Length: 165
Image 1 (cartoon, rainbow, N blue to C red):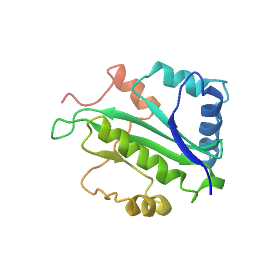
Image 2: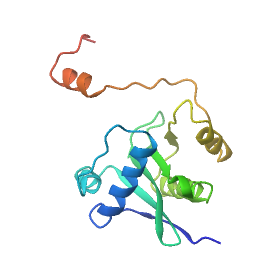
Image 3: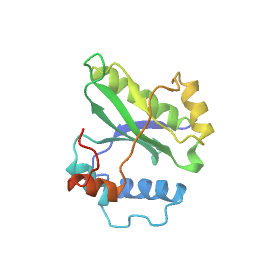
Image 4: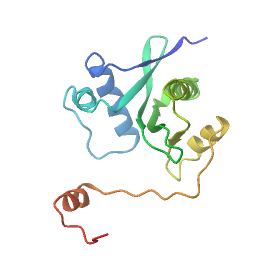
């Protein structure tokens, strides 16, 4: 039986582990370029303390992570845990690492006074959707996600938006 542990990442101490895992994530997503600056992920997390990462370790080897933030408010004026990304290396999928990460996230959410946990997944990722539904997740149909890419973000920040609402 595998020894499966989950712990909060330390952005400084876990720099190499974070770089490796996030690089694997980029390769799995087919990114044209990967970030290869040593310490980039840990440095970025260190600059944004509202972003946290849980690491899943199987038999002493780090095999996955969950990046998340506590955000406020939701409709009942309570905090929620927002899971930005759950990732388990290909060879460690179905090992229980993803389930253990989700359990630890739920535990953290409860301990931090959150009343819910939200996340998204790609519409074509049927395996992830089935996984989340097995855990009790509900597919939400009443929300629409929006995004500003880098160019649109820069334009809006410079006041080049088209709406005056």
